[in-house]
Length: 357
Image (cartoon, rainbow, N blue to C red; front, side, top):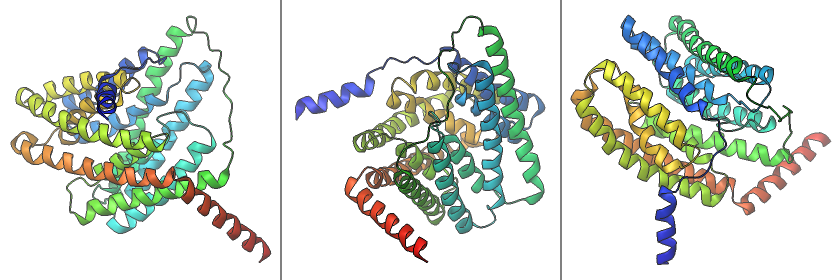
């Protein structure tokens, strides 16, 4: 028992080896920070944040693919980002409608990313963008403008990826051939998608019912836990996320004591984004420590958040804890073989009955 506890503690600090390109963390930091610095210059953080969010598409950049394939992947994901934002904004006029639509959207996105074997981060950022958009105030006239600035952020990421590809095209040997692989067991994929959709919808509804200021933190945290690849991995991610968030909130508190200007906050976000991308593939728990202050700074930049530090950090911990628990419950359904077997049988019976009709 004691040895098991010690091993768990060691795993919290263990750094795994990664074959990920060392350029990606720096590229990701640039894609997130450049729009923020431009927003600082033009004194419009709202539009800068939207473009910065679009810059996260760089995380789908795969240097191991051929030059043409990696750029095509980024362009398709860029269109996916804008579609996700459009869906979230279009149905944000009612909290219950937006929660239901987000659930169906999460289900559809998971089916698509599973079908085409999209590598990590997979469906995460598409659902994250839709979640954040679902919680914004509804303004039909502003939807095209917001989509436009997000798309500008994705184009900046594509441009930086293009520069990276041109500079490294002779140095890198791309041995992997881009192919579309179809996952076997369509009923299994459908069941997983339904579970994810249901729990994402429930997470957003819980946020609305609890009258959270930014309820999207709950479905985002839930989704992060659902990214686990096994039942044990899901529970480990839940524990790591809660503990990492608790430590990260302490780090955020310290950062806010010294970062009291928009410029210092932009620089801090750049550094934190770099650290997150370095650690996320090596140790999820350590990455969460830096993700927490980065997301808080991104969400509150441009506002008078320094006067309400205690309220903000406590609210973020509560949001993430609730979302993590819901994600762990969803993971139990996804990786429970008995439930999966019964659900598969029911879907097969339903298909047979529909064919007879």
